[in-house]
Length: 132
Image 1 (cartoon, helix red, strand yellow):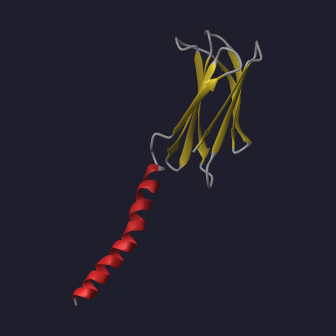
Image 2 (image 1 turned 90 degrees about the vertical axis):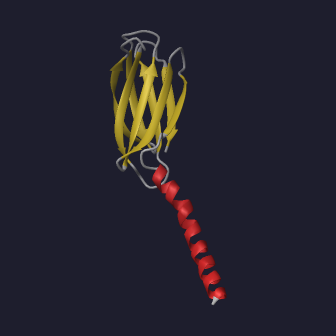
Image 3 (image 1 turned 135 degrees about the vertical axis):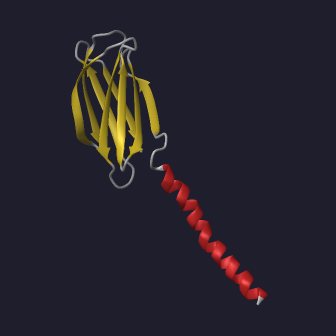
């Protein structure tokens, strides 16, 4: 009788252990801190990007910091190599920056996002990537 009880406990433990390791990974994909990247542009500006889960989709935030207020930029964001969003922006405020927020579809596997921003007056280019 003791052997059956010990065997049942061992079997149950062996089955429960893989489930315990899967639960935290699944939970962290929801509303965690996401992934952040940043870098320098081709001249004096710099960029930051962030991607995080948001209700089954992915929120992508891109920010470009220029050197002064009033700089005009053209920007685009691609998702897994396909164009997803684009527009024009002007740096503002004390941070001399502009930001773009978009909700993207969460595709199967890892999602890769690329920002490309070009300053109209000088041709300065910012190119950033983030994956989630």
